[in-house]
Image (tube, rainbow, N blue to C red; front, top):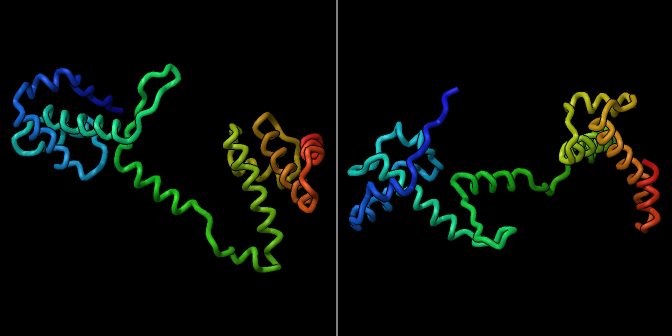
Length: 196
């Protein structure tokens, strides 16, 4: 694996431009050229042709300045020590996050497995298994989906903390389904907690 090259320090980059305001403006305008909106690392930039009239260092300075200004424009917050905190939304991350939001969001139509009486129960059980696995993995359980599904379907005793988390989540969901018509009370929550 090739180790990426370290970019030049920003102080060095400012020295390359000096006090020439015209050159600095040219450098700042360079960020619109050659990047097509995607984040480019120094190691990538070195192998591309810089905008006309600029060196690689000047082009990198323009990109750095644009990222710094974007970070400061996005949000200014305070960190734990009350110091300035900002972050940068590097392209194409916002666009990709938007795509995830669109595709991961709920859908209005129901899958045919739910509306078909012959497959509804199987679909319902499968979705409970998937939910138990996914929520457990989000909580830190580490096992494969295949092993987790075998654990739940076979009913064997869990081996280790991760399998116990998955199995308990599944049992909890089954119990909640059984109690879904009950009124939610602190006693009911305690009952669920004690019985799983």
